[in-house]
Amino acid sequence: MKIPVIRQLFQNTTPAQLETTLEVLEAFCEFRGISEHEVDVAGEMITNICGALEVHQMVSEGAAEKDALNAFGQKVMGSIDR
Image 1 (cartoon, rainbow, N blue to C red):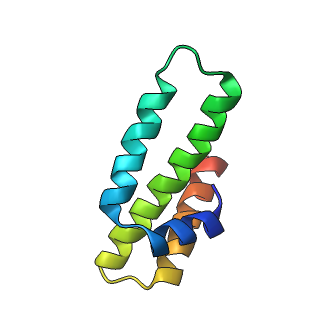
Image 2: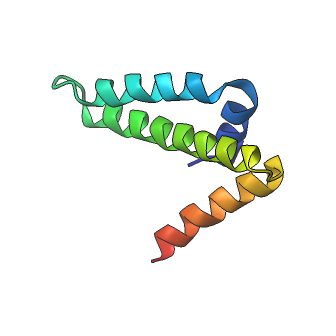
């Protein structure tokens, strides 16, 4: 998870574009011929896209962009600490 990447995705793409990309990456990960490294890279991209989608959701509910990004970062860090 990289907050600058999530911010960039949030600012430059719509939720619909992110959903479509997410579907493609998930399908890519299911191919038998891809390497573990490729799955790791796609997984990192999926995490960032999911973060951007969550930030879009929080902003649509009235949160400021900065607050939404910080809240997402804290949520992820909190789940890692458990």
